[in-house]
Image 1 (spheres, helix red, strand yellow):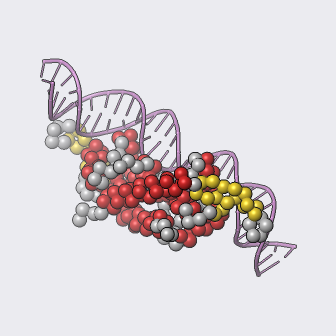
Image 2 (image 1 turned 180 degrees about the vertical axis):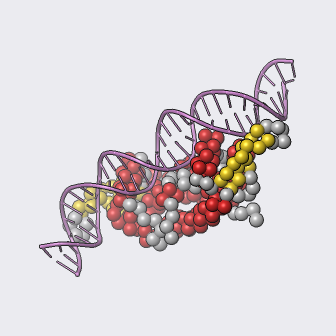
Image 3 (image 1 turned 120 degrees about the vertical axis):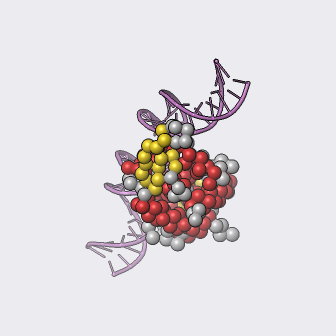
Length: 110
Length: 110
DNA sequence: TATTTATACCTTATAATACAAGGTATTGTA
DNA sequence: TACAATACCTTGTATTATAAGGTATAAATA
């Protein structure tokens, strides 16, 4: 099933933070991790994942360093900061609050 | 609890359609209906509800007519169309699909 | 009675978002 | 050797929800 990408708005950072909370990763791998963890529902395009990571880093929620992968290739490895973990916890609470209200709204009166 | 208004993005039309599916209503009343039904979680500002209704009407998902209220005041009464009902059903399915994936994402590996 | 609050409608301008579309370069595979 | 996959990135854009402003009437209250 396909769904309107607009639904993601406002939730993307939470998705990315949550994926990164499972362990450090580089951008491209994170994209795949999100895809797997969501059972192929969330497919974040590259034009989305890179700017998002840059924004999160700028805000101090994640940090990165250039490292050499097994293949000898330079990759940028991201990890979540303690500030990022706190934000993620807040976002999780926000999500459950929001989704509960949506459930109330969508339950038919009938 | 307050939550980031950005979370609403992409879900607003669904919220409004769902509220209107409980019966015809005018804009101002709809705002209150949404507030009540969501147990005070969703508080849609007027600068949001009016343009949203205009958009929904333009798309043929709702329709409206000027009527006279009990107080003798002219109000614009909105009701959901059959096209709107179909869209709402789609949106409900989209929501449950989306929220299931979010749940998968937010569940910690630990 | 005068004033304030609630009701009821609306528009314009704006910040933020996610993303399409474009690009570069390397590594692995057929 | 060609092609796909990996890995990174930027620019420009459409859409969104909303803040901030406005108008006018009805109800409540001081």
